Structure formats: C-alpha cells, structure tokens
Length: 371
Ligand SMILES: [Zn+2]
Image (cartoon, rainbow, N blue to C red; front, side, top):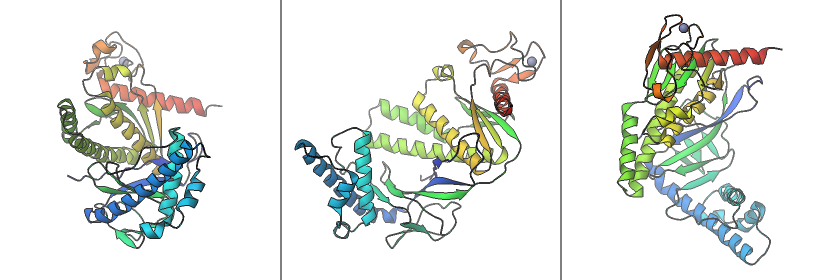
C-alpha cells in the first residue's frame, strides 16, 4: 500500500490582518520510485560520514577545551571532499550548517552519531533540483515519483532534502513557490472537530474518518500493547500517518475550495477525556487538518480562523438561548440530538456547535473590523 500524501507545510508571509501575499512557499513531498533507493542510500551514507566527521572534530575540540567549531569552520574542513564522496558540494555544506544548527538547538557539546539506524537524509541547496514537467533532476540524475501533483515545469525549487522513512522508502521534499488566488468565494463555514466524526460542518455535512484509517490506528494500539518489534510498530505508524494525511488533504482541499472563510473550533479537553483513543493520535489528526485547511484556503484566496468552542454545543444556534434542554458538560457528551425549549428547533449536537462556531468567527471579524 503506497498512498502518497503530498504533505505541505506552508511558510506564510504576513499576519492575519494583512492583505494576502500573491505567492506562498509550499513544501511538496513526493514518494520516489524504489529504483532510486540504491543511489540515495549511497549518498545518505556519505552524508552520515560527513556528519560523523563534524561530530568527531567537534568532540575533540570540546574535550581539548579548544574553540568550538562553527558551520563555517566545518565547511572549511570538509571543503573538497565532494569529489571523493561523490556527492554535491552543497550537500556537504548543508550538512555542516544543519549539524551546527542541531548542536545549538539541543545545546549539546556534540550530537548522536549517524549510522545504519538513522533514516537516510540528503540535503540540497536552492536551485540544485529542477523539475522538467515529468521528473526531478539532481546531479544529472532524473528522479521519478510515484505520483505527480500540479507542478509547473521549470518551477523554482528552494533548498530541500531527500528523506527516507521508517520503511526505507525515499521521498523528495521540495519547497516551491506557488501562486495564490487573489479572491475567494464570499461563503463561510464553521467546523466542529470531533472524535468519531472528524469534522461536522455548519452546513450539516459530516466528514467521517475512513474505516481504513481508524482500523490501522487500532492495529497500532494492539501492536504497541503486544510489544511487537520496533520495526513492525514503525511500519504501522508510517502507514497510519500516510493514510491519515492523504484523507485529510482531500477533505481539506474540498472545504477550502468551497468556502472563503473557514472558522474552526479549538478542541476542548473534555472531548478528549471521553475517548479511549490516544490523545496524541487525535491531536495529530486535528492539527494536520487545521494546518492543511489554513494553507489551502490561503492558496485559494481565503482564510481560516480558530475560535474558542466554549459553549458552542450549549447555545441554540437558531435563537441564541441556552435553554435547560441543552447538553451540559461531560455528563451529556452522549447526547447527540436535542430540542431547544425556547424556540423549538431540533438540533444535531455537532451541527449546532459548528453553526455557533461560524457565528463566533463572523462576530470576531466584524468586531475586528470596527473602528
Ligand atoms: Zn432556540
């Protein structure tokens, strides 16, 4: 099973209230064909060699109480090794920079060695990978992918990397500049994030996480409890993550295309308390979904807004009352439908919450726009 989710993390310019930039930087992730594995494994070993050389040099310096090495020092020391290692000179430079950065981030005198167990990694610099409309080219080699996305031939590609996942598959992570639409539909939608229904829209539409993805999450739980080998658990993890991302990409793309304003509720802890699923699993799904919605809507000329979902399930979205018949707190989490005592409207709990979330979002924007 090789569902490839083209995951993307946006680098957005400008704050919430600033006008939209016409371009945004997205990191596309492509699963590469397995025939490239041998060459990439070879380059990854060379990268590890450079990394370990940096580490060893730094370790010696630290132990001898000599001046610690900067990225610049490391680059000078590794200069000229590219030919012998048969990798790109800039790959070596990037390794030195990343080594220095990692050492500073972790505030360590030296770092862990990169070895057989490290996931393969081959960084490259801006302009070194190109795209001809069908495949990517790096150091004269054409890399073909399992899936293609809407990418223009000759697109500007920034500094990125080839990365291996826990299953040994290789991916290409390329930051590309994409155009954003300048206007979006005037429509708006509220979204209530949930446990069994991933999301309920204020339109009444429900987005259910596919059975496949939920089943593999359960399998993951079983494997972890049964203390299966780390490799087996890692495999399931990777599959779950891929399926989840693929599903979330599609679901969020559809919403971002349809609505110019997307209002999402933050998720209250009481919701999570009511489930036996791992919190981390839920969190991962929700945060990916929010992230995807956010950059996809910007790309489509729209925007997203996150608002507090406090009281969103208790207020009647038709009349604004908080009638005695409303679902209250954790005790009433199982109450899926209710009727408002005040106006007599029948509510689906989640749709009502989504409608309130949408209203809070619209109110926030109105208040924000007031002088
Ligand atoms: Zn009512």
